[in-house]
Image (tube, rainbow, N blue to C red; front, top):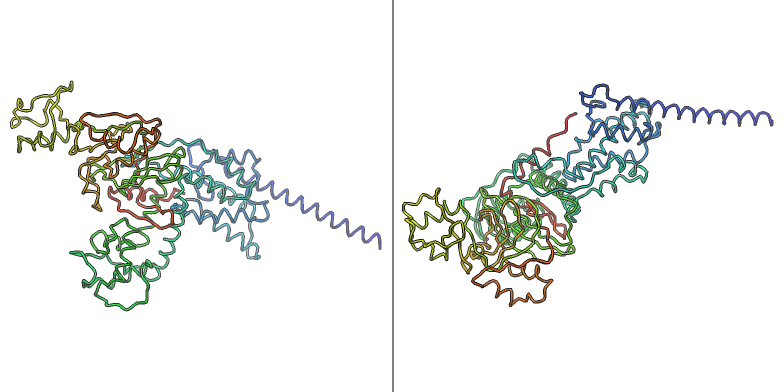
Length: 561
């Protein structure tokens, strides 16, 4: 009996040793297969695995070489939870505005299905399958990390000007993958690469919400969401044949309840409440009047808004990690708004007027270092040529009426009566026009300077009525500010002598006064047509400079395989 028991224990021990040996042999075989998959025979050819082009053959080789080609996502027998987590994160990347197809998802899904079938005795999952899946999962991690950190699209390749400098330390993505695997947390590893701006996660949640709307849209409205058109504005009490369709869209967006008494052709007060909610979402005057801007917003389908969200999440990824929300002046030209942020608290929000479409305000960053009270305005040559000289020819008193003088290149004032304006060739005009300080000066009573190559700055304006307009793309490129005195007060708060009274006095002098700030404040002139506010509400704006389409096309282009 004792001998039988010993034999039994020997058999168990032998089986255990053979099992360990078999697992070890299996892992060695997979390591050899991984090495053969990522070793490139020809340096001129693209590195591919299972028909999928690798993102970085160099980083992949370094990562696996450091671990002696040991598989990263399995033990060669079973796919653990972290492998499933990685596949899940690839699927979830759509909520970052990126395309899961860029990250080998189709090939990875096929291998997962094959593996799961093998667990049900419906097939075999070979060592080569483990090796292939391992490499594809690792490469997907590398690509996603790079895209989250820097963006998929290179803004330097765009037609529209993007000159917001990016200062980012090298990612060391291979080391990050080692850490993520050791800690067993892919999600946290990706979240650490998100843009530093706090709105990004809210934008991500908003995009997820839009995908839910798209599912409902595809189930009910696809093919029937026709473009609405109106000839004149519709007000409460008006009748229109499209009212029923407008009401249906308000219900779809859940801006009004689905159950209430209604007349199919009458714009009623309940609908008006829904229209105002829609107008707020799209940055329109919430007056309840259905005008062209509101019709444009009503025509936007979930797919349209998803596209807008994707573009703007990519834009945030282009911003430098050095841009902090400690003290920052942020101008969103698409929203016609300036925000002065200090320690993540918005101290001032003000309406702005930005460049017309053919004088589009560029996207760039600079540092504000001084401001000028009671500024003069040296008229740009293009404006002198195209606007001022023709006006003088029509009205000899034009210069005097605008408080303007003629100066030569040395700054000496020239008597305008000595110039024969009717014979003056605007293209060969040898002088400059300068507008003196005063209430009607085109720069208003103060300008804020952040030296840059575009000669763009922020300034006051005498044309106060223009701030009431929804479309405020009206300038030659500079940024006109509705509340300049408030911004000046915040910037000069370091000096208690700058009281409200002293600021007002400085704004009404006959000579310029330059005041240097005690620190340089980052200024970012940005273009954002989608974001989510502090309450998580989605905000959409018109693409006034037609910049979104080019980015969307580049984002939607699937990587080569």
